Length: 242
Length: 246
Image 1 (cartoon, rainbow over the protein chains, first blue to last red):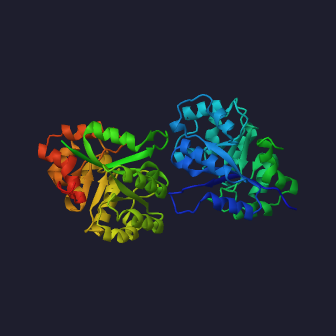
Image 2: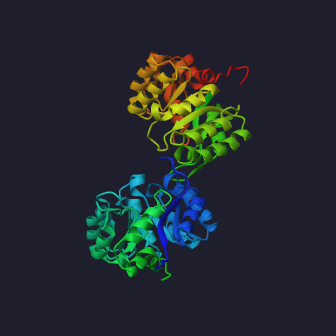
Image 3: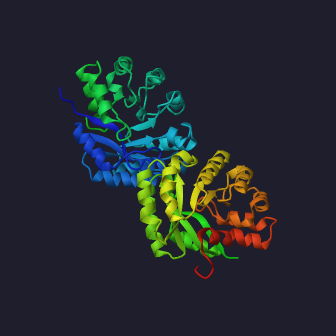
């Protein structure tokens, strides 16, 4: 069975931390080669330098590639409560927000992040939050009460899956992404726990292998309907197209 | 007292994205009597050294009072060498900055050896970010391995300026750049131990206001000659500029 594939987690741009070759053209080519129709993409300049320059670059380069859907980021350490920033970014064409508390080293109950989430509540777009370390999903619970925004936990692995599942059981607006799922049976287990409609395919390409992420998902012992939901259906629903 | 600023950055700042352009720097230079600045790019130091070097090349071409510092990243040795060959041989670039790709993480000898071997023929000084004791020890090891080159310890060890100074006392190709800790004692201590001719003024712009570092030097209990060395003379010696050619 051929599946439609939307990758919710891709990045391009400079990566100074370790050696990596990450031009946007390489990302677009990888998507084509692996049959991915759309990818939510973000320039690393927004993650590593400043979000103003990064968002501008994301928007400009995504406009040059039909397969790329622009994702905005805002670093709370440089956010001064500008009201309406989320609406402005969505109006520019951004379809999701991503946050990187681990890479940028700020706590998820950072007051400026809370302000940002308040601002994002006015727009109907999902929020993906870096959560690959143990303790991250639990920390996020501090800012979840009374929020209707959809949160996607990025980088959940076997090590913090129980924690993620516990959070997801309490908060139906929390989903999780698949980039770090590598243990045999982990995806099936996750789907059994929270349902296929709350798992989103993300590869982390160009930082992580798209082939590896896709291979893992395709080989998972879950139903075709579940695969279809994880690979594209859930993300389409969040983007308002399905 | 004329000033040479051996370390300033231009471009949008990380985090806040506040623009600090070459015009902003030129105004600051005029305000504080800085006659020449060695500059690198904020984005070059944070995430994209190739883009940053390109920006600086355009700026220094248009601003004779500014000279470039080529930024390279130890994670990209081949690309770094290409950048060096493109820029550092020209008279518009005065120094080489070795970075690790992460602010606050210093470079080590093992990581930088290939790049430094390739840099041997260019003679120009090498900058190393030295925000703490561990970075100072790593910088000292690098300097000892390449005794024919001069190494500038940007930030002179931060709060560990005593350690940086003591290392520089024994390793004669180390030069201290004074941005970093605001300790009122560090300038005096460094002058006593290594002499003002191996201490150079760097503003640390746009992250530090020049008034703070200038005040630190002005306020130190050292002679006017020492202050002149720090503000100007050491840089001239470091870059091989004599008064007539400047």
